[in-house]
Length: 97
Image 1 (cartoon, rainbow, N blue to C red):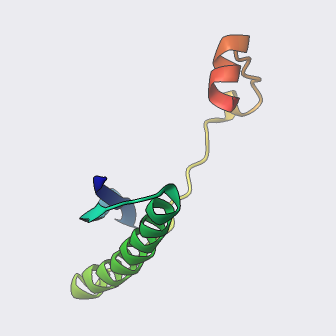
Image 2: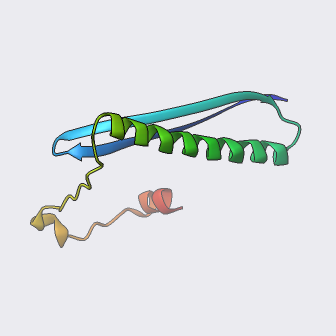
């Protein structure tokens, strides 16, 4: 069976207050797959390649733009912190299985 497999990584990075950069890497291949085991092997290889590509891309972009990743911490408003949220049974089972 001829198969097209596509993997993608996208990440939004906070680089400064009110400033973000989005880095996206895609990879895709067309290949002949003869079994589910072969499909799993090809997918794992693609995942490893896209992760390696993403790490290299991110480093190059941040170095080129002379940026460093900044951690963003968001604190919820005090009036929401102590409120208990009740999910309906249907919504809870849909979210948590």
